[in-house]
Length: 204
Image 1 (cartoon, rainbow, N blue to C red):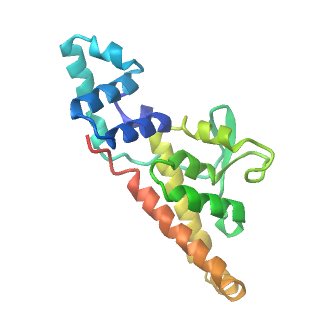
Image 2 (tube, rainbow, N blue to C red):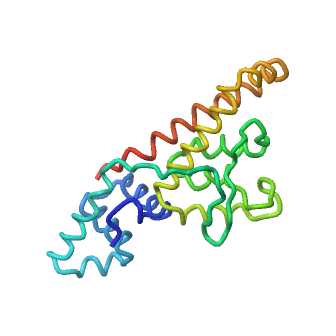
């Protein structure tokens, strides 16, 4: 039974988040969530002794707490059998990364794995070239929720350092491409929103 964020992978978190946003009775949602956390079927949960179920439901209460991000330093991470390299220089993101990020951020948090896959690239590869990005998205679902929040915070920090704190770059880029500058600043704002949104805890 998963009873803390450090043991909760992003894939399970996404399933739980979807359940909490469906129009069901609260007890039905709770049964489904306990089933996910305990790696059981709903039918198995429903056949548990009431005392056991109550204990498991109590353990699931951690979902209402704030999730602290893991410290991510930009080093490659192992996930789902892949070695993924985080994007660290946002001044060099490709148009494809920008377009995909804009697409996925519209439906956040339901697209968090897809959103993170925009900035996690298999070692030795260029974004969405020579690999199956769907496989990366599945791998991202294997990382823990604290890692997911930590990665988002890392991307936000690196973006901030690359764009906002580099006055020389800002001036040079703004002169060459004001439109590109506006787009990059928009990503900065959206990454900050994502970073704050996924750590606040679920409405349990």
